Image (cartoon, rainbow, N blue to C red):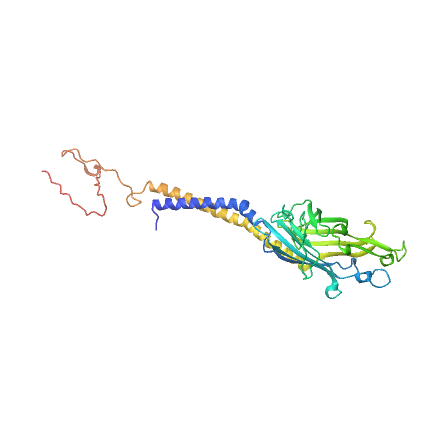
Length: 398
């Protein structure tokens, strides 16, 4: 069914308006909507598991040997270790910031029960959902390394600085400050290289925590001990002479980051805890091991990263392209229909395709004569085509 000129013009205007709206949306989505989507999700629940690397040192001090027996403290070798962290999002969290809580444990798996637990802590920090940095409020976090009589964590306010569990959306090849909860300070995580993990591009960063006295961080009894020299294995003083040693900590941490989302795909730590009378002269090893995410954790983190990459790609590329194409098609269709409708309406007659002829001039007088085929044809305007046909009687002249 053919459309009237007015209907064509209306449809053309609608198509042009729709096309313009779609093109505006295609331009706005990458700049506005993506900025809303490109944030760390609030529904995170991530479990990461790291294990000591076979063939490398894995040393653990037998704590019982410090208080029992006559000989020096015993350091076990080739100890199987597992580090587990469970991360969740807590309140306060909103459109711009989120509070991340991570409970971490390190245990030796060759000992049953709680006796295998080496370290445990709970860390909580409120961060920006885009750049991953702690918010400016003070305090912006807390750390628990002890429990109360009911077994609940005793949270101590701690001001966090630097990144912790996420890198920025759109991570760059540069140095970032990274927070170490053991010494409660941030140190430089330097960009090392761009590489791939299971065909996914990642950025490798590395940070080094210098040798630090844990007693200066938390004045816990285990961080400074006084024992007989013989128990420490010290030979330059009498065996029964008390010797006070401080526990020191150093670490080299490696992080592999998926740059679009800031997801930590893989992590590793070369931890060294030791007792000494001076920071530069380790005497008794408390813990020394290289612990790295296992394959299951790496695959899980890659899945999280890819899910978020797909969201960014959907709103950053796919949707704008589709809307742009639809917008151009709508504009072309609207302009074509509008121009075609305008040109055809200028020639349309009472029935849409039949031109209206100009009225013919009437004869001047009775003496006028038209000769044969040269006489012009006279058409009488009938007005409405549905009117009845009239007959006109013309009187004959002699």
